[in-house]
Length: 385
Image (cartoon, rainbow, N blue to C red):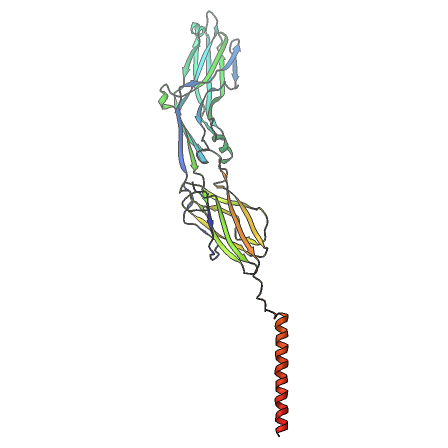
């Protein structure tokens, strides 16, 4: 797989973010299951004596839990979740006790009022209070008798608060706890000796397929920062070649892409770290936020050849997925820009040649003979006159 390439041509500097795509559209995955009917423990009220009443509000023990798989953040960034439950619920009352052998008022009454709750982290669904009553009389009270209130449809859904979203991400399970709260009352008649009332709460119908628990996960694919618009390139080399000191700056351009798709997170550049702080290299690189998938950002690198020899600098870019606040499972990335430039001294100026001593001697003799000849010629011309 291609991971780096070299840029070695001088270009005109530009800096811009080319937003050719729109904000990402989340994908969805669904975890769902059905659960068998289950009942809480009992809420018990007892009384001793005739014409007595006792009430308890101690919550019955929870019914068995239901679990669904968390969203695996190896597959993307969790941005939201919606919890839904569709089932039936009902309350049950039971009564028993001891009555006198004869006479009137040999009755025991049970009154139960319970509301059921199904909860996951950050989400809680509760039914209205469901009431049911039952009683026994005479010899019937020796064995418990019970009665059920009519089943009530429980069909609820809610979005998971951002603060709780992390509880839905991982490789474990999300737990639906099922509980009830309310009161159970027992009342004895004038001919009763003692009485016991039991209340409990039932989740689900006898047809398991009708008891549905669901979590819909919203997620984004990871961003994909690269120096190439078509493949993954995490490192580039900007080679300025060999330049003479004082020859002026040279500029090379490069581009950062987010090559994710329409369902991918944006990417942000959060920091830039230089290896040598070589001031001969300057850049328009700057932090940015939310480079959306399909978009690119253009930058330039300039080299001013002042220091003789081989100059280099590595710019390490720290990036991260940009997703809605509270998202879970974002990744971090690194890109590297390697710069290099060789600075040469300018050639020395041309040197004017100096005559050798022998040449100087010949020139002096020549100049002397020329002067002597001119003086003799002037003397002859004077005598002739």
